[in-house]
Every structure is written in structure tokens, then in C-alpha cells.
Length: 380
Image (cartoon, rainbow, N blue to C red; front, side):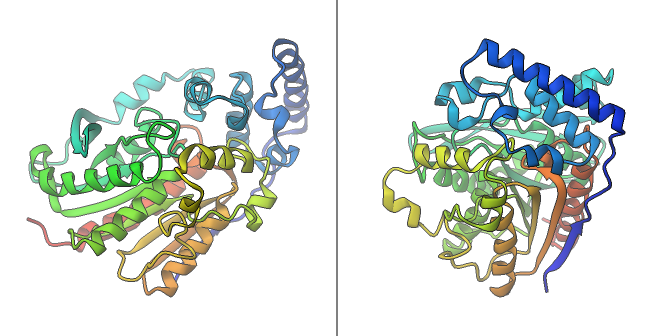
């Protein structure tokens, strides 16, 4: 039975005086941006409800910092512009600096080492970064194969490093963070093919970086959540060693952009309905691809026989309904499933644990299931 955990929306943390200052600052920033550019800023294009619903001071600070950094709506950008503009991760680092904290020093204090390797694909290789927590003993460690988000078009393993490092630190497992080919240069299903190739490589080579090939799990965020689920499906269908657990964080699970959360959050930041349409336009090789079970996990995919799943969603996110429906479909298919929705936070919140309390709680929710899966497995 699905375990449903929802975070109640907390009372507004900001005092009236702080709110007034923030509102005035935002108005000034919007005016300045309007003078400098004829294209809208994130805040200018966003539904005002996004900021009102992000009723926690730490979430609001990140959204305001995104505005100050001049992040533009993805669907107003070219591919190159979208790939090179500041990211939510950059906003988190800027908030930390405002708080007198050094992001690099915080990362170093986690005591997680990094090693860059490559795995083979059909016509070359792709990077895979190995994060190993220090002080975990000499025996082989469990391995989490992690897939980053970005709509299969933008972002990379650097952008999502905070999530990978936090998972390594909190689980005591190695995290293998996978890079894959991006659209529009390599359209669907290139990223899915690469993701499965990376998983098979980890199965065969885990011992080379201190991993236990019998203790593997999958974690993915956003588009990466879709990749993680599909890797589990491909492992089942091709009789490759199954992962023990999959954690799907606000996954892309369908092509229907008229779900309740798409409607409620159509102008949300940092992810909007328009941005999702922009991604789809760049990713699909042909219109028929939109009907692929790989992109329609909630309606067309066979979910039977998959490993236990942890599904995590954000309330202020067009993909919230996708994740909730996927959790329900997994349970209906006989898959042990836990589900957590987080109120008052947006897409991309999961990796913001350095500044966001809800991110810490969501990570801990995932880590509990991952540790349980690893503890119940037979080691090499």
C-alpha cells in the first residue's frame, strides 16, 4: 500500500516588514531588467501565485535570487542561451554567499571524493562521475546510479552535483552520476539508450571503483526520474540485474500537459508549462514519439515487476500530478511504493539542502528507503 506523506503548508515565515522590503526590491529589479532587456525576467513571466505559494522564507530567498541573477524563462531562450544562463543551483550558491557561507568549503566539509570516468555508448563514450563518501571502511559500498534533470536538453552532472553529493554523504553509498547525450543534437531516445548503457557499465565495473555490484539503486530528478524508471524497465525486459530501489524525484511521467498541476502551475518558476513544451519540441525526433511508453509511464508503460519505488514531488511544479499518478500506477501494478509531496516548494528543490529545510527532509525520506533496500540485499 502506498505510504502517502504530505508536508502541510507552513505559516508565512516572513514578517510584514521583510515582505514589504522584498516586494519593493523586486519591483525595482523588474524595472531595471525591463530597461536592460526586451525579454521578460523569470519573475515578470511568472504567475504571481508562485511567489505567494512559496510561503517559506528559505524557498522565497532562492526564487528572489534567481530573479537577481537575471534568469530568463527557458521557453524564451535559444538552446545555447538556456544552457549558459544561471541556474537554480547558482541561485543557491549566491544565497549561501549572502549568508556568509562558502559553497566550496561546505562541499569539501561533506568529505565526498570525486573521480571522473567514462562509459561506452554506441558511437563513443560519455562521462560518469563517481562520488565516494570518505570514512566508510574498506569493504565494497552500495552504488546509486544517479540521473540528472534538465529536460534532456540543458544541465549536466555539475549542475546537479549537490544532489549526488548529499546522497553519497547521507547513504554511505557510492553515487555514479551519469552524463548522457542531449537533444536537439541527439534526440529521443538517445538519452534513454545512454542511461541504460551507463547502468550496465556500473553492473560490470562497480568493483573497479569500490562498489558492490549486488547493491545497486537508481535515483533520478525530473527528466532523470523518467530515465531512472525506464532503466528499471529495460533491466527487467532485458534480464539485466535489477536495481534494489528506485527514487523518482518530480519525474516526467507523461506527455499530457493538461493535468491539474500543469494547469495550476502553468507559469511557475523555475519550471513552467511553456518550458516543458520547449523541451518536448527539442527532444522528439518525430511526432509519434510523443506516444512512446517511455514518455508515458502513467498510461502506456508496463510497470509490473519493477523494484520498490520512492516518488517525491513538489507542490509548485507542473510535474506534481505526473509524480502522484505514477506512484498510484506503480502501486496498482504491485510495486511497493512510498510517496511524498512537499507543499510550498518548487521544481528543483531537492538539491537545495544547503539552504532549504524541505530539501533536507525530502532527501532523508529517500535515504531511508535506499538504506533499507541496501541493508536487505546480499553482499558480494
